[in-house]
Length: 324
Image (cartoon, rainbow, N blue to C red; front, side, top):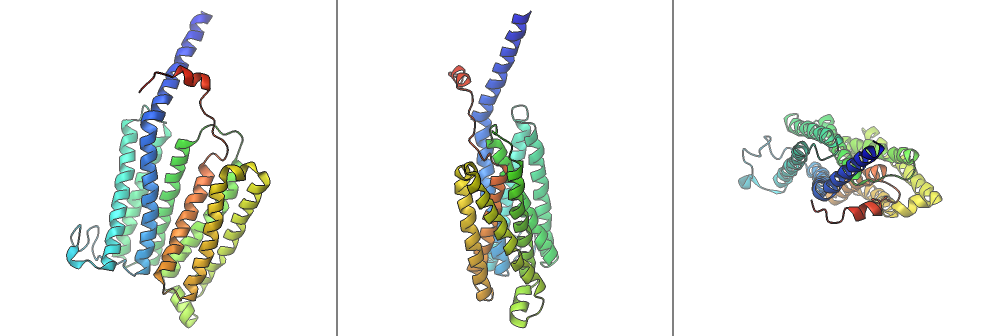
């Protein structure tokens, strides 16, 4: 009886191991590939959206979802129409990517982790909200609150997508990292708030009114003020990771990128103000840096900050010859 029980346990372990190997070799690369493309599409969407605001192209296409009643409005094409049209095209591609992941997760529901279909359904919901806000920005003639909400949902999509990607890659973690995650959440939240305020600065003309006429400076001053706690929190993360040594050694590429982005973000912000926001390249770069800061901080929060444990070598040797 004991022999049969041990044999049954061994068979069940083999089945789990085979399913895991098949998942790692067949389904995981596809989901990770789609996830990586989704992250790139989201960052491009945020940056192009910033360029659209800077170039005052938000209403270049008077209708929605088409542009001048056409999918490709060649007769009306100029730089502003192109920016708004390309922004919508990127949003469309993003929607296709997320919908594809959701459909595949339903098809493969028996072979993949249970949490994936549910999480992908949340992504689909956020895309629908994002599309609705995109339509409202045109209908409401670029209302600042609608535009701010549009950007905020884009950042939520980026954070959720990166968290899914990192959870797909994570192996067992050697020790608790709750304190590390909470520490990283501080600059992430502050960056999100500052970015949303930045949209308000652009969409309410507060910067121009403040710099030219010294009026409505509250929004601009609040946006600048957030640079101080963000800088302090990121430098604190760097200092703590160096003190812990292992944290810094395992994450030095991400942490070094944070310092570089922080410094360049400050420089771009100063240059934008010095040029009275008349140089689009500085403002677009400022938006790109904010997106990359959010992406890297999210990656650090959800990735395994320590060495990843591989499968037991003895188990790997038993799997030789299995070709899913």
